[in-house]
Amino acid sequence: MKTLSTPLALLCLSLLGVWAACTPHKSDKEYTDRMHAEHQHESPTATPATAHGTHKDVGKMITFGSEDGQEYNGYYVKRNDTKANAPGLIMIHEWWGLNDNIKAMAEKYAALGYKVLAVDMYDGTVATKSEEAMPLMRAATNDLPGSRNILKAGYAFLKKEKAAKIGSIGWCMGGFFSLQTAIALPKTLSAAVIYYGDVSKASQNELASLQMPILGHFGGLDKGIPRSSVQQFEATLRDLKKNVTIHMYDQADHAFANPSGQRYDPVAAEDAWNKTQSFLHKYLQ
Picture 1 (cartoon, rainbow, N blue to C red):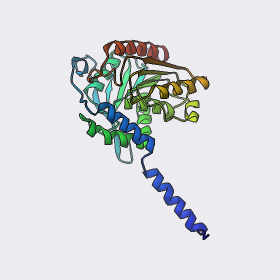
Picture 2: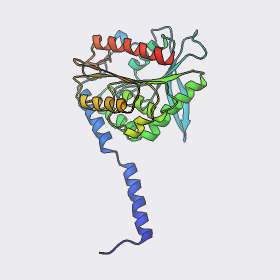
Picture 3: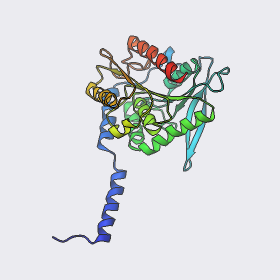
């Protein structure tokens, strides 16, 4: 059997590495496909709860960082009378993008005294149909290093804003990225809240590095985020002696806390909202 010369073999291995780095991970593709299946017949619908700019703590779009000529933008909200060292929140949108619903949520949390930066993972694009959201989410989840850079820049911005403690919160794809924020900042992030985001991709080594408390809210009817994956995530964290609290709402579906969605569950959403307030107050304030 003929073997390759050492230089040629090294070249082939190098090219193989480049190919692997540029090829979407199967699991990332599957995650996007699962979210498409969940949302393919939906479109965000405006409700009074999603109207932003109605609170007295109205935010503004800002540029909070950049890398290689790429600007990072987000919706930043803080009260005029907030304390100088008030805690900060990195907020990550659902797979629809940084839309009015997320801006309204940023204002809602700012009213509790947080400095809230809702980061834009889609570079200004907002989807209203599942077919529009699919490639946006796939690009963000396939480029984890680039996406984590956005999240770390958000943390750095809130630190410059003198936030004494900083947590992360996100819904759907944003829940996945709330966990990714924790993984990217395992020793410095003070708390992480995950609403029905994929938690199956984090390795045991990544989870072992986490030093912050984690709160998760999931729907028992959610086919896109299987109950078994959530249970495995919780069991792994508990085996690692981590501070984790998971709430499974048995009769709630995916996106149960989104008032602009067709599966909004006001009872489960209100309970999760109250539990999240208590959790963030305990660990950030």
